[in-house]
Image (cartoon, rainbow, N blue to C red; front, top):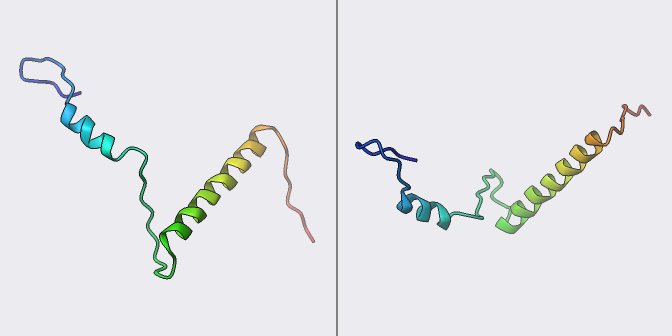
Length: 69
């Protein structure tokens, strides 16, 4: 919170409204011009799901070792 010259704390409502407009939105950058926006977003969301699964496996004490063929 900003502090005024009279050493009073105040809430900047204009900044809160500006931030509220961006709530729930995110931006992705890719160097592949052939992909559509939906494809990029789907790939990113799938990556998040995979990372969440690995995090869950590590937290449940499942010990994974390399598998040699």
